[in-house]
Image (cartoon, rainbow, N blue to C red; front, side, top):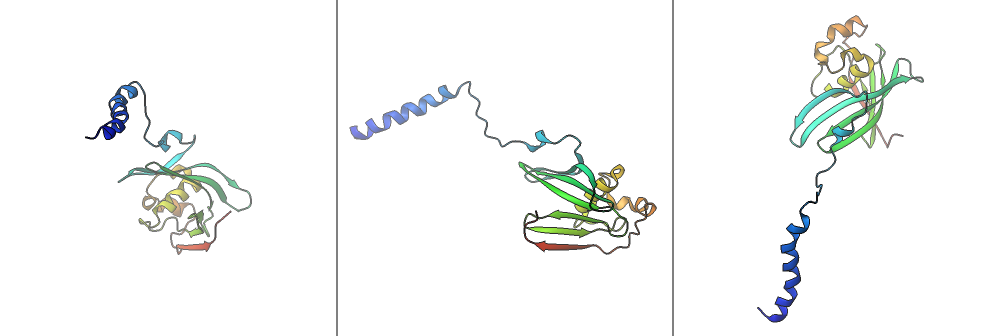
Length: 172
């Protein structure tokens, strides 16, 4: 090796051999923050499942009456997936004539007409879990398919047509 190249490599070699010594006793945090450490008080978890990148948890909290909507509720949805966390403000209508969940996809306003007491599948399970937790909190976290009798006793027919309405634009 040429003397000039050796002279240039000496500082790099010295740094490489000293690095483990310098790092002893130092803690380097390389993990991202875990959202489960920051769950708000009163969070009612409605869904929890293992996914390839960790655990997915969906819950509701800060439920209050919506003064401007008859039988309406306003609440926050906590959606954590692995190291990611999204919190959305949502509205639900709890009346038996037109139960509904109003949420956002981030780019669209999504209005979901629901049928409490009707069939629930993978395509509408989250909407029903959230609706039951907000409108009838005694049944929060239970499988909506097992709540048909409870829905009928509370005046829900179970025969309503479910629909999603997507409105373009960012909701306020």
